[in-house]
Length: 431
Ligand code: SDX
Image 1: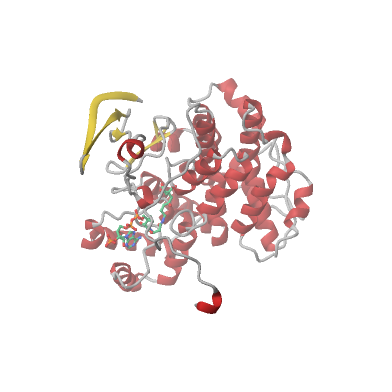
Image 2: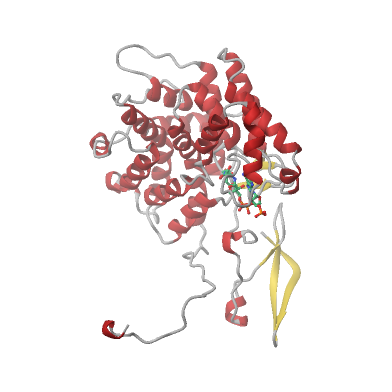
């Protein structure tokens, strides 16, 4: 972070506060307000953190106006075309693309951690079969600290590394177990001769009664979906993980908090809500009715999969996902998929509509992902768990960056208090 020679001066009442400004490698300059309360006895006010940089980070950069997403400086489009998910995990975690030897070692370490403790099978049995897989995942992830005590000391670099590898390796297994449990099928163990995405598909769709051969088209599409969702700067769930981690909580508890936050339909839950919306629309002729509702201030309905706090241009992930959706459906021989037709027409109409243009609402990562996952055979309830599997490496990379920052302190925002002034207790007989 290069310190800028310019200062920001804030004058209010009889006070003038001068604060340093910093210039990032990319993106807006920042004003360091850390001494504002001590010197000016005032807080800044930014619910939703629209204008707040909560940390400095080297991991992911987003340019909302250009529709640009970089993982450690590499454009997502290039990674989606030339890389694979586990290589992107190495890049996000350690900061550079791996050599062939480093990639082989990383792959071997992740592979060796894909099984979960056998006792976890019994932990799953405590849930109802019809529990939402996200509920199961939040519970099981939180319980990981009850199974892996030897990697919960965040002050030990080796334990941080082991916990990171364990979570990247085990999340697909846990997500697949959540799916199998919800459909009443036996759990399928990971296979060390399959790559990350193929292993996940195998654990989800194989059954003991017959061999299951992973379709390479689906495996490549799954790998690409995982890569596109891997990290995204300081989004809600990542900020949740950082805040939980700032108290010194163990890494499993922090990632469980991230999964819980991701579940919301305004965030990672949007992919499930988006496919449900596309199905509710059903046919192209009903699109205008839903566009009208999305624009109606009195109607809470929003176009799921549209809009973004940062992207005021196309979400570059949506562009890749749209292309992938068409390829996968075509290669699977699923032509004229009604949901894809509705999605494409909805996108076309919305992008020509004054309301969406004025508010800069474009399809986001969740708009097309559900169509691919649906074509793969996943129920909508598994869409957000798959997002969580992908985002785990981003959460962990951001958590590690924060824990390893010697200047980091516990996060503790303040508030604008608008409640009752101090008042005396009144005995119940006098109320
Ligand atoms: C993800 O942050 C990340 O990086 C998240 C994510 C990641 O990788 O981690 O990218 C993943 O969460 C993608 C977003 C998925 N969510 C959805 O698709 C749900 C639908 N979208 C919205 O709810 C909304 O767009 C948000 C939550 C994504 C963004 O909300 P903001 O930034 O708070 O914007 P806003 O709600 O203030 O909307 C601005 C205006 C409002 O109108 P006005 O009050 O100004 O008149 O745009 C309107 C909104 O009503 N608007 C929409 C809309 N999204 C915003 N109107 C109709 N349909 C929509 N989808």
